[in-house]
Image 1 (cartoon, rainbow, N blue to C red):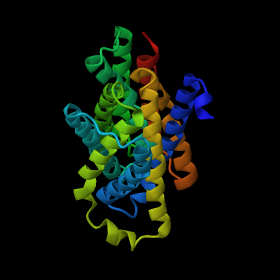
Image 2: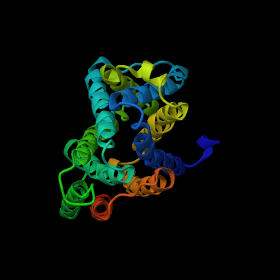
Image 3: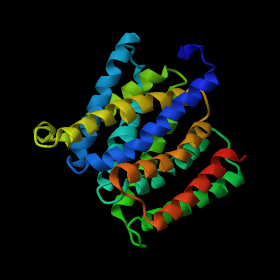
Length: 290
């Protein structure tokens, strides 16, 4: 049925799934981090995600990349999964899911900058202005994460995670020119999960101690935003430019804020929200103007 849909609709559905799933991921992480250490949560989540993609990769013929592409895939794994997830998990120990998602709204900017420098996608003066606006918005959100202006280490780590994910996004666009999207995300995810292995010490013992709902939350984080959303977004990147695919991320903070309020009773500070609005405005300019 899905194959009969026009390519544009498949891209739309893929991005919609990614927006909703990743929007919930910030909230799910905020809940799970109450029970699991950051490294345990990251490794457990992506162990589940890696195992979820494994049967699909086997069904596709168990292909491996060329030897010359292993380095790029390892970098993708380390930046897109190891660094990204560990930094977010540590960061969300001290800031709300909505605040983290608002900082995450900078991701389209990082993707666009990377695509401009490494993939020769156009970057006009108008879009450069949008980048500066987005930088200002992230600064306000980060400094106002606690409801007043001060340095927030948690917000800083989330921003580092977003920059790291931008490297992953650009390399993904490069790799899907040569390989199927599912293979690319599977290889990178397995590399990233191996990178998280040393950080997952004590996971098995911790599973036996925490409420079953917390562990179920980790499993769902692995299956949905971990495996499914990455596969969907990688498919979209194989069909449209990085900037166009990244535009969909504008809606992710809205999803996270609403779900964070409904499920956790948390809302970002008014300063963080104001900064997030500025970030989204800048990202909108970058990804829609020529």
